Amino acid sequence: MVLETIGIVFRTVKYGETSVIADIFTAEKGLHTFIAGNVRSAKARMPFNLFQPMMVVEMVAYYRDDPTALNRLKELRAGEIWKAIPFDIRRGAVALFMAEICRKSIQEAEENRELFSFLLENLRWLDASPHPIANIHLHFLLGLSGFLGFQPQIDFETAGSVYFDLKEGNFSPVPLPHMLYLEPDATAQMVALFNSTVEKCHEIPLTRLERKTMLHKLLQFYEFHVPGFTGANTPDILEMVMG
Image (tube, rainbow, N blue to C red; front, side):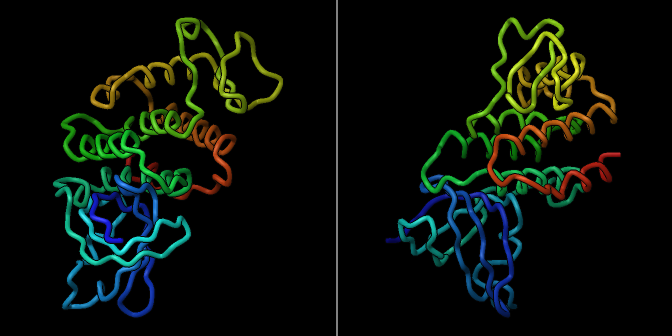
């Protein structure tokens, strides 16, 4: 069948002399792998820059309803024109981080419009936000965890001085026997980020060290709850460019 849809590129690898293989999360069918020929040549009908991580693309592909299939792209064009992400090193680093987290954690090869809208909303705000973006990646991790099925269950009881258990994904009024938890101050910051919108997450006060620690802990949280989630590389890039 021919699939016409919009998609978000998670990862692209070069294949042969001029082809690429791309993992694209589509609005219609979820995450699938596509091959495109002759994209790294002077006469390419599908420019290679459209295959960069977190590019939003309108696409036409020959599609098989099989999660393991390698589907062939027929047409590809920009679905969104980013004005800042490709040119701002900080926004570009956050987009790369989002792409790596998505690639390591999203597996579903079926339609999920809410998840697609969540990703698109975050990318649009990352590109257009007039505010500091230093907290966006933390807010993104907390939001994405809900779609992956292990979001912290935050309620009125969480407002007190509590510890967040990274292994169990719940809260405790006392320190835990293992060291895999957030201290009360960090837990309060996490709750504040969780309760914020992406448009207002910059208002949560975090120092550079607190932000670094929070990122490290949230990635540990993902490692406990996403099968095979290990070895994220982009946090090091984020730390370098965020300053």
